[in-house]
Length: 190
Image (tube, rainbow, N blue to C red):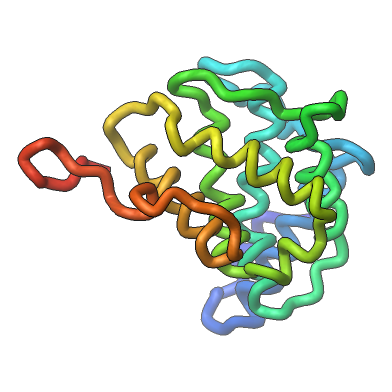
């Protein structure tokens, strides 16, 4: 069982310390993540969006640790479970489909983690998907390209997705991998 006290004793001074900490956290999350699911609940934590989106958020937030571990060559025993969840969540024919996004949708925020994975892992990630599955991932993430979002750090999530597409050799919006600007040329905040 994971203990906050034990984790506090990890100084995170070395690469191995970080790998241990992230693996411990992912192991704890794995207990909440049923096989064959495309998301998992971390409890009643959502604010202004549905429980389904909050559960998709739970899965997506874990990817911020999982993808860098994979990129660094660490053995992550449950990585395949996350890849399967991505396949299910981005398949519009799956009952686990995460759905199409709406304006100002929380799922747009979560897309940045997938962009990070594509940017870090490139073909090491895309090779885990069939041609159809990869097209589903690309289509689902590409919703962010023309999404209506607040003028905030959300704009950078779209940049991360486009950068991920570019680094993974997928079609990308060439204008979408640069910071958004105001009409006067200054960069939007965020």
